[in-house]
Amino acid sequence: MDIVIIGAGVIGLATAWRAAARGAAVTLVDPEPASGASSVAAGMLTPVSELTYGEEPLLRLGLASRERYGAFIAELEELTGHDTGYRGDGILEVAFDSDDLGYLDDLRRFQESLGIRVEALTGRECRKAEPMLAPGVRGGLLAPEDGSVDPRRLAPALLAAAGRLGVRLVRRRAAAVIVENDAAAGVRLDDGSEIRAAKVLLAAGPWSGDVEGLPPGVVPPVRPVKGQVIRLRTRVPFLRRATRGLVRGSSVYLVPRADGEIVIGATQEELGFDTRVTAGGVWELLRDARELLPGVTELEFTEVSAGLRPGSPDNAPVMGPTALPGFFLGTGHFRNGILLAPVSADVLTEVLLDGTVPEVGRPFAPGRFDAAGANGPKTRVGGAS
Ligand code: GLY
Image (tube, rainbow, N blue to C red; front, side, top):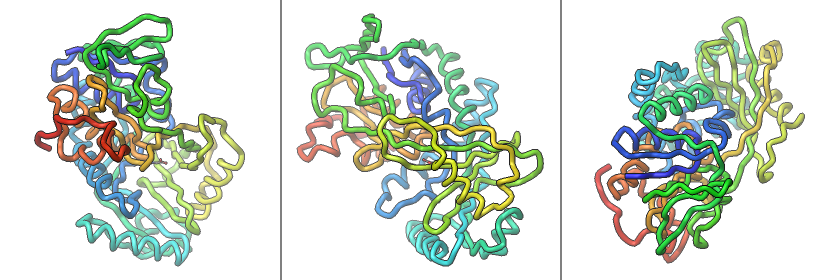
């Protein structure tokens, strides 16, 4: 079976690898594979810590992906010999003042009502877990099953895995989807050449709306949501595990790597396709990080970068078959692309190869944005989770 995947970020790459492992002939189209948000993201793996009320289906998807992460990484690292910087030793979430602590308490009760394991910690227990935390930190939560991965290592490892399994990489921009006889028939590239295929998966993140040739309404309005991230370096032990903080209602997170890098994120800005880094963005991140970890200002400043998250109308992924036969979506992962890569790859591989949507993926069908369901398929929903 011939499949063309538009977009070689973590979702497109992971799906290409998984589909090729099942014997599909896959072509990936991307002028700059393993770049974009995949090269900016901090890589926190936290369905729990970033939980928002009313997002239970997304939480279940995140938990399903987190469960798969260890085996996904083990297989990837064994196949490629790459180290992805994966760790599953928990995420600490701390509160700066009593209002922040009140919010974390509410969040813990909500998580527990959903059967999710989190541990409430006093301020002293937080500082025992992370000795560099400020003395005023009020308390926190430990999500023991959360973790992190280094997306700058993960994406190249996925690219290598896809290559090992025979995935063809075309370093060009996909200009249009070719539609013939009311079905997708391949992709036209920006140089006018064509790649013919029975199935086309659009996984181009915030650029998913730029591909031409599609009937109206098939691609929901995926929008770019800018995130600025800074990178520091330490030569002495500074932070043991990924730590999120609420500082007067503002959220910041710090993710340490084994080589001494500390990634601090992230702003959330609705500015269209703007990837400029700003003094205000850097200030905001350092201001909040310093409230939690005063020693942060002593560290070496190595980088500031900005990426674009693909936000969908309800901020959840858009995955599965569309009203156009042969055309599929794997986009809209917003703040969760790195976390959701394993489960999204499994869902999309089943969708592409078996024609069924596994249970865990059903709430994210493209047709959900259309009251009449016109954007979704009329049949072929089924199969095991
Ligand atoms: N998931 C982290 C972020 O979007 O900032």
